[in-house]
Length: 251
Image 1: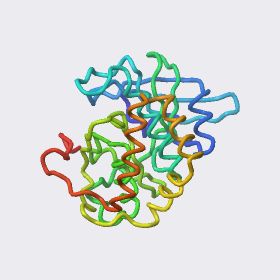
Image 2 (image 1 turned 90 degrees about the horizontal axis):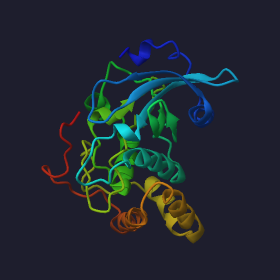
Image 3 (image 1 turned 45 degrees about the vertical axis):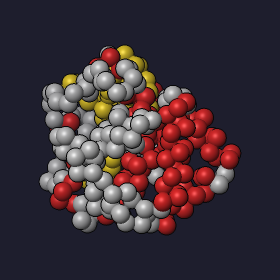
Image 4 (image 1 turned 60 degrees about the horizontal axis):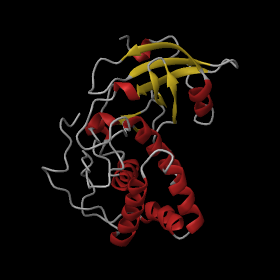
């Protein structure tokens, strides 16, 4: 596969407001396999009739490897559910993600992030604590079983992005993460405030549940709600187990 940074569309990056429409309706002009990872993923070029264009990561359902603990054919739905939950919580560190049919069938399509290849998670973690606190809290809420170092990107826009959320929202505790910086620490009030506002509004909570039920089973949605309540009760990042809670490999 060619490097996405060398792709002819790589210099044209849609804004976050325009990206969902391009992802949903743009014509897929090229589709190239990314030759690593346990599930099929492709970099695709998109263009629409208005001249917007950009790159996206396409993960088709038919390319998902069978897992013993996650229902078959659901990882692409979890990618979308993570993006929806993130936005409804008022955060925007997950790139715009839609579900649509592509060259290999239905799957998720996520805006490609042009990352700074000169650095990686273990280089920038100390300087980007505020952003990583938010990602760590989201991973607790979403029960993320796969927060590898390579799933935190420092974009060339100067922002830390979180990608790869296919292994999320299980009903059984599955957290595996490289973000250990905050174990036992209080969750900052600036992060708890939007959760409290959400939980205190039955209308907003039901809207969140309704949105997630489009992509997740009802028990998974209710487990998400329970985790939100538990974190507001504890108000701190939990201590993690150095065997159970580390992804393998960490990259």
